[in-house]
Image 1 (cartoon, each protein chain N blue to C red):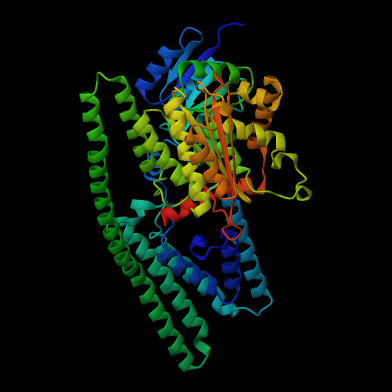
Image 2 (image 1 turned 180 degrees about the horizontal axis):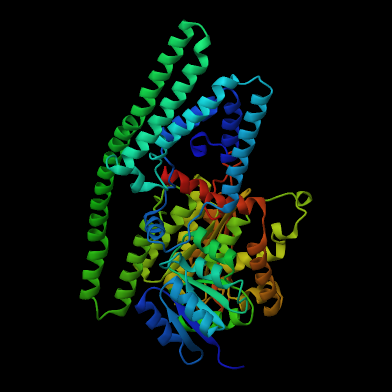
Length: 395
Length: 213
């Protein structure tokens, strides 16, 4: 419920307890909201969700602290309620006892509709357990009503009638309430089920299009180790993106563009390119230039360095976006090629410098190469962090 | 130095066999297990030097294994191995007490190196983990506001993390920063300690957002 309002659970509970002092409004509101608001379930990427469901990872649990807190809050609430009673300013003393009995009776009826802990056992709508619970609830409510009526006998007949009517009405409402909510619950359950089966179909289609095809290709190319590795790597990347939910489009952000470029180069040049990113930035012209230059650097590393992996690291924070492309390959002497070859100068260094950034190439024969690129971020474009991206995707 | 005793805890038989074939010899594989309960049992019996621990496993995952064992047997070191790129799981298992994290496509030689490092009490950070750490400790905070050393990385530690994220091996980091490999190891261990002990507001929030706690 707290999620729905976007405030911490503690405050919500406190608010309800304060409201309870106002003639029990809090209790009723809490019960109603509790029924009608769905229990929130965090959205996870499919891979994580399934791992959670199968118990492969340790999920968050209700800590003992939380239980203790709830009990403490409840105790405080009841304590203050009693205090108000004893000063005689609360609900009339004659009313208080029957009301308490009535509330307990209703709690028994409603309790069975709690979703989580009591689960299926409590959810059965027929049978001995159900009948006895309903019975107990009704008896308690009736008892409270009776008590009320005898106590109030001295008052005017009008008031008597009115309160009797109200109580009867409330009784009917409260007893029928659970069925109504159940009906609603069933409807939404059905809807969920439909969505779920559609999702299953999507998963099947996905597996068919990706994994099955790759497996077929692998069998065909079984003799070619390089091709097998590339195919496996590509499939891994796709599956990972799908399972762990970073299937961004190349046009979305710097990191997405770098990942797309890396994937492309892996396919063409058969060299794994590992992209690690901290922070992210939207693609404005400067950042786009940065991404293109980084791509060029990756291509160079994959083509000329003769390595079996290329590391790319992107960091966006504060006012600059930086990308490092590194290989442990043959290396070269940057001074020797600066004038006669366009690649490094034109497409990497100049491109970044035109956009106000800086680029440097560090390399020596036999010592690998690292290209460091950075561009300033435009003032108005505050960097978006990866977390924000994650939630956008899930939304 | 005597041969290191290693346990492999992973629910995929094929993976266990593969790793075993790759590392058996230089180290001794003393135990294997495929879920949390059996893992806790064999680990308590054998008390290996280093446990290669899968992040996702039946019974609550690697996190649960560490939770149940770490208090009683702090001398057993854990190295997390996973195909999962989920930051919350990786940081979670480190915060529980693992001394490092590597991905499953690591080569045999690199894995042996990582095992030796962890056994010696050092930390093993893959580029990806270094990236997560920088992410978790990201954001500039005024130094005046921070009274707890644990809550931020020093500039040097940040530099080391950055280089590791850029794909530098410890040796290369040392050369780049003109410090000894031992010093790099010290920095990395100190980052690990901060990651495990820090109650830094941002880290907690970050973890919370990713439903870590």
